[in-house]
Length: 139
View 1 (cartoon, rainbow, N blue to C red):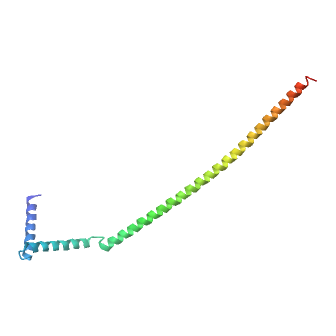
View 2: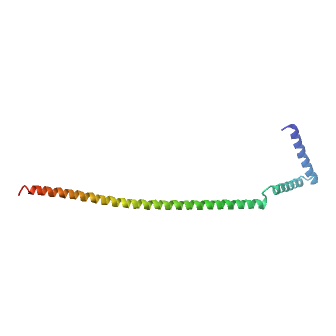
View 3: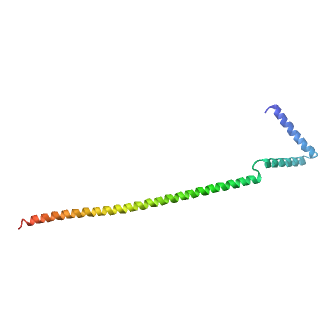
């Protein structure tokens, strides 16, 4: 700071102290109490002049809290709904897969039985031809 600013601040402080001593009749304790009282009044006045004071600030906070709460609740409901939809889709996919597995098992079983029957018939035909061929030798 410049020398002039320091001088002005010092003069203002001395002038303020002299005012409170004069008002208190020269008693330093009374001057200090008067200064504290004036400082509290000034602080209170500044606070009351600030935007969003007292009840307005409380109302704003209350409204903001309600808005945040409602947004949180709606987000939570939306997430629960989405989870239910996903769960239902998963159940649908699971039942579809089970049906397809059962159908594939049934088809595979019937095809296997047909193949076994065909093989048996071929073997029986071959055996009967061989039997008739061998028995014709002994006639």
